[in-house]
Amino acid sequence: MNTRPTARWRILYDLFQQADLVTYDQAAEALSLHADKDRKAIQKAMNRAGEELEVTDKRALRAVPGVGYRIADPNEHVILAREYQEKSKGAIDRGVSKVVNVNLNGMEPAARSLTLAVAQLLTREADMMARFDLRQQKSEAQIREIIDRQDRSEAETAELKERLARLEAG
Image (tube, rainbow, N blue to C red):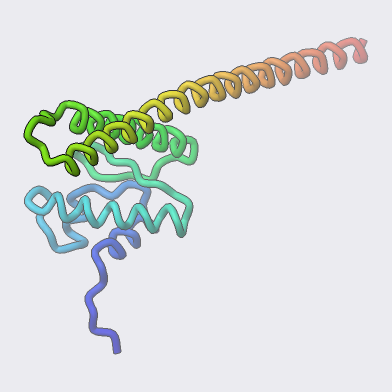
């Protein structure tokens, strides 16, 4: 007999099997927590439930500020990925700033060498991410152009079919 309590994330995961939106109040009630005082604990459980939803159900969670979390539309997954990409770019930039803007005077030689090496590596990583971002933007622009062209072709085909039907009808 299993007497272990159900993990908080599992309770929230189960809520998302029944609804596309779970508010902080609903989560707090299900977890026997306070919606405001225990917000961090709820968010932690939501994040873990979101991981399980992604892996198991191929669905992602999106925060609804001040309300709770909702299941993201499948078309939003790319948007979510880009948001995380932007956050990671900012984190790398902040890391570069920390190791570039350091007073090296009085630092032990080993620590100084490590700091300079990390600065060089993070700077390279930031440059690489910037180049990748440009390539990604170009690719996305090309994809949008292809989709627009396809939409125009479909509209033109429909118009030609309509004209042909009118001609055949006489």
